[in-house]
Image (cartoon, rainbow over all chains, first blue to last red; front, top):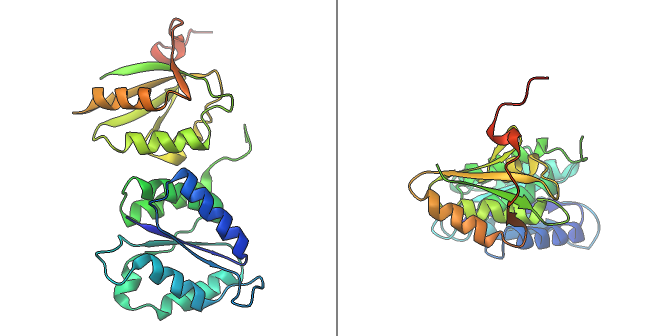
Length: 138
Length: 103
């Protein structure tokens, strides 16, 4: 199954988002978090993102169908870029970074992952969430 | 192509939770599953497409399945979405099955 990596400046934000993915997608969907800095402040670090990606990918391709990374804003994109460079080419091949909103993207990708969809399908679900109309009648 | 008319009974409409269930159940089957709402339709295997319909409480939808396991898919969806949907008993709303009346 494809897993999600949730990256945010805030630890509690991604913890809450993990609950949402578990509720709507199901407990089976692997989710790893990279929220906040190691000393508990708001922020993102490449090390935490690398660790979260590897947590989802597992030690070998047998364990996971890949990881979709969703992140919030600002320096998260930079930390993620550094994190992706840390990965081996084999690891990088099994990671997707869709242009998608964090909350709606995680919700949509989590449901898509829960039905056993392939890595690119899960990433596409997150992208599709970008255009989801939110305001009723909007 | 089997189809069934259903009414959304959940007071919040077909919101996130049932939409997610819709996708999960529909994805178990090879058949295509389509939700028709008036003149619009959505692939029930796509969460964003289902949510995009913005199905309100009390609305009638038509669930249509097509493929080798179409009947089983329709049965499963109707049974497992029971808390959210009920079989429509009133006559069909013409917008789904017929051309709109000329003004």
